[in-house]
Length: 146
Image (tube, rainbow, N blue to C red; front, side):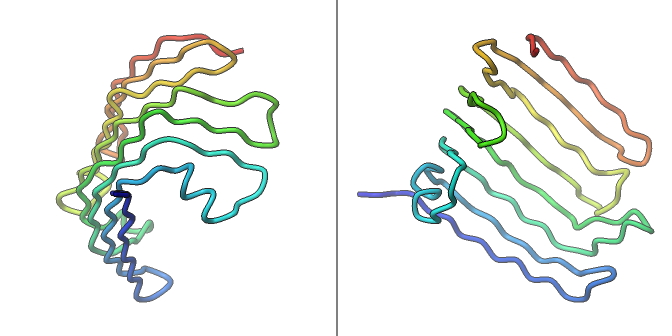
């Protein structure tokens, strides 16, 4: 039995400073999704799992973002585009986003671990980003890219 799913709602009210109410839940094989969508010239594969909720105002001028909490994870990822001859393979992304008050200062993003192989060379990254008013970051990277 196929257990893939993609459930999403995205309500936007207003344009200049939109109020956003979003809910995203997924556990899906991206290869099957790409095949169903029929997007030409791009090969995207992997298993995507996500659970993200966001609710609130998006106002860059006043540094407001929707209150957000969630995770998006990708394993066994693969990306091939017509813009480069070789694919990016072995993509793993474990991400977490939190913004309990809906401000730039309270936004936290964690990427632990993130890794991929490019031109046969593995790249590993761990990152914690916070306080987007005065960005604080802790990034560890290991690998080689030419």
